Length: 371
Length: 162
Image (tube, rainbow over the protein chains, first blue to last red):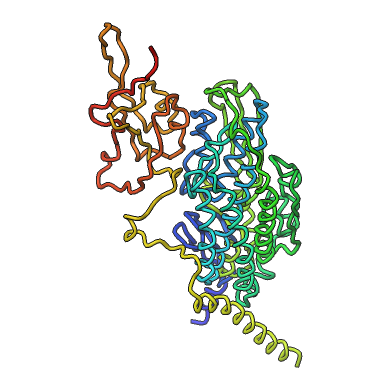
């Protein structure tokens, strides 16, 4: 009997976490190799909701591609749209009106806040704090209302189009955004009070799931997860697009590299996003909301790449064009796929319960991984 | 000895952090919520109003004479990325003996629609618009195919041409 017990303690065994596990936030299957409760290796198996979006794009015009990029990382739908629109505009040399740039920057930042709020909800929920989930969703509702009033969609908006916007913003947009900023500045301090200092939360995240800067760079972990390891990768700061060179904001960096560092980067990013919106919201200039484009857009022959800072990291679009109305090849560089690749080196040697916290701190969205 | 102090100070700090968090929840427990976010959805159906821009479904507005603006030009069908629109046109011979294309049926399959709004944006005669209806659940799939133009509807005649 004692031999059997010793055998079990020394043996590795495999366990499937997912595809229907609530903590993987979607259909992601992690094959874990365990010894006791210690994780020896994590193998992510992707492809459960692979839809072949890159291939579908080869039979769609440039205006039609936009609505598919919504469905990658659905929490930063505006930002994904922005990448494709900017690529087409830069390739054709279209100069956008200032109004479009202002609205796009504000919408991007609102999307970033909404995404981080949902991340905060699910982070709390994964660690067992269900109150956080309700409070976060409650405060996310005003942003969804702002989106719905101006764009018509709550989660997936398809608001940007090459050359501008689908329609103009609602007249009450500015007031709603200002009300939201005023409200959320108070609420975010509540978040800190409720979860950031909580003893259970700090003990389950501090010093756990460490990703070093070298690893972050070699795996291409970008966004808040990379910046939690001290990797300076904010595209808004280093390769500014739209209006990001006109506004003042800090690039949030933490050097600890643990789950708590990734957590606090996101919390501070929400505050920075509020600052960015505050600088822009009063100065939206009057003018057209879109440029007149040709009904059939044909990119000149060549290869184009455009990247933006999505809520989870660097989102890049590569389009190879043969001069036709359809792109010849589309490659989407999604941030979550690279972030997931680092999961093994973050989680091995940790306990299986901490894997849930690590996964929550990486904040992956599965449709973005599988595409 | 130091371990013992750490043990108790850790416990004490932990309790303080819990009390801080419970302060937030307690505040909401004893004060009535300022903004009520939750909507009593099935009960408030009669008073529920969506925003004007809300993308519920594609509709074709008709005026009081049962006239629409669609000229059956097929641009919405070409621009739809999912093939959810099918424009069926018929040739009508008018009084002068000229053949003219006219809209027969505008089929719209909401089950295949991804609400990108390209049909509405590209329509040259503004014949389509967003509707605010959002309760689309059906028992059979073929009920998702809707005919947008009304029975016996006609193209709106432009005034002031002569």
